[in-house]
Image (cartoon, rainbow, N blue to C red):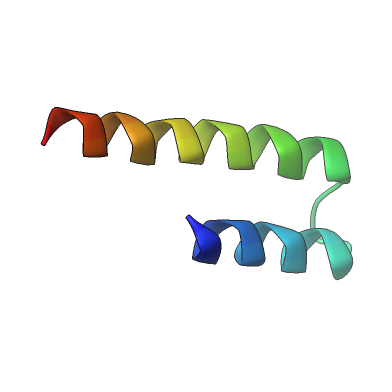
Length: 40
């Protein structure tokens, strides 16, 4: 989860994606990680 946050933050800082895109991407990928971990 920390790596996901750092990677997303870096993309925003280097203007590869907008903050809005970063928030949506982080939320989607974080939800997927949490769902996978709940299934275990």
